[in-house]
Length: 301
Image (cartoon, rainbow, N blue to C red; front, side, top):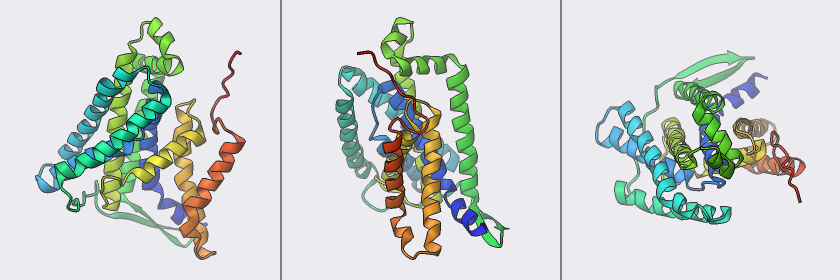
């Protein structure tokens, strides 16, 4: 039991990154009816700014983080105001293709701005580990992962409280339910979608900074795997609710760690943990196509 807990503990940072990334993707999907494939690239761009300012320009680390978040927020605003607002009549597939184009553009821009050399390693929030024993097994939490968990809880809780109790949250839920009806009720859907794109951009950069600080890796595509898992989390939990994708974002990293635990008994399982988890997700989606917490939508014919 202690060995299992120790294995699952290693997924804490991955859970935080996936949850924050999923929240951003879910907000955009609910208000703009599209899946933003450029979310990971926007996140990487903001993280590059943070890394450059903190490691090369000598800025204060936390001020550099703030600048990176602002870059993500402004880029999200730009994408909505300049691109998507002009293409409101484009169908969902067309919007997805637009975001795919943005991926290529951002990946091309990053080396132009920051060069092609290996990016410096961004430091963690705090160095060091918290180590204790459970059932005779050593459990290790990095302080960076624990702080990331605290930030994730605060950020996600704040967003859900705003969605539940604020006028902005009511407007977001109205827009997510039916944009045309929301406009007829006096909701400025342009402002709402712009705000959600901005928040999603900031959330993406936050996820990237947490990942880069915890793993020491930073490339223009290093968020791709987590973006894919965020999409899968939305599908698993059900995009028809705001909380479903978040629960899905917790389940997927835990499932991968759980499958990886069996490498202690069956050699080579760790190399297949993603494949096994994705197959299990496929089975779950086949059984519940609307997601674990999704709601069936009845349409009149």
